[in-house]
Image (cartoon, rainbow, N blue to C red):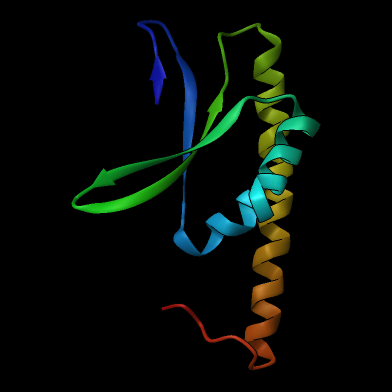
Length: 103
């Protein structure tokens, strides 16, 4: 996402539209909790690609050896757990017929 000639200092993860609200949470609460628990600076960014808007969660990693690298790794672990829970809950609701598959 961003960096200098020697390494990337920011990384971005594209979020599917149906996942964005779960990551951000009500009034940004879930994203704020991820930031607070991990110590990682992260933000939501929207880019237009091929005439469509896409949402990205951007992580500030910093340079090798900085504490921010560990914070980014912690944020990714926390996000992974959140997404596993959200996707699992959606799959359960689909199996119970409460939610239609988005495709």
